Amino acid sequence: MISSELLTKSVQDVVFVLVVGLVGLAFTPAFAEIRIQPSLYEMTGKDLQITYTTSNEDGEAQLDYHRFRKHLTFKGDEIRVQRTELGRLVTVTTRQVPDLKTETVSVLIPDINLEDTAAVFTTFAITTTHLTTIAGPDLVAGQVQSYRPKRLTGKASYDPTSIRPNLSGVVTFSPTCPGPQRIDHNCEQPYVGALVQLNDAFDNILATATTDQSGLFDMLVAPGEYIIRIAPIRIIPEPIPEPIPVPAPLPTPLPPREVAPVTEVLADDDASLIRFPACPETAVSVPDQGSVFVRIRCDTGIR
Image (cartoon, rainbow, N blue to C red):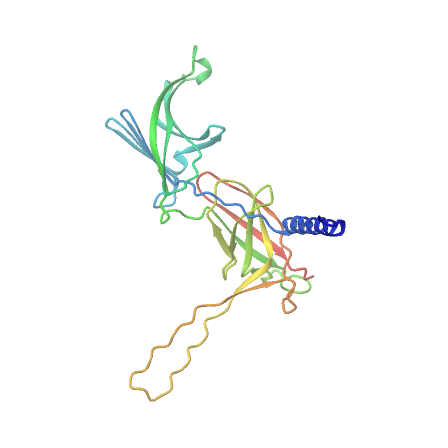
């Protein structure tokens, strides 16, 4: 038989473990994984082939359209992307007859989270004829748009060498000059070694980056709405030490050996660390194609 004192102590131990676990969860930042998104979509159907990439060799979106002997290439602003509940609707204009009609082709691109380097999918291409008149579509009698859908099978993939960061920015702090600010004085400096955190709406940390000597950072993330925070720690790279000279004489001098740089992480509670600037939270919207640049200015508190 188990005594009442032993049972009571066991219950207390279980409660203690649960409380400690809950406290740990409350103060441990949550990390979420960003799935790799395809950058290349190759789609084929009857008498039709469409290739769409979110980043070509120039960093632009590109769509190639093949139908019979017709071959059209669209780049950059010639491609319109709309996010819908069905996925991304990628549209290009393939033909225009003034005061009569315009033809567009829209491809429905589903959301695909790659588990490997490629995935197979099915979708539709919709050719739309938009009727108009010399006075515009309001004078068209009856149906203005007509549709010709075509089923497509495709392969979605990505090439790590062709993918470029789609979120970048610069972090600075100011003022760095005490007293009244003069116009001819530069009192703003790059925030070197700042740890940039990308958070979602649920405060999950999705990605991190460290600013370089110019205060710049970049990331590759999925399109969406995010919050950027500057963490209260700083990553300071130490310079490579000078090579140790080889004593002479030696028959064949040894080449100097380079030592890999050491990265030290400092936190605000470090007694040797000066309090870092206060940085604001920054909301950012990453588009489906193209990139976005943000500028974050931190306050040093110097007045």
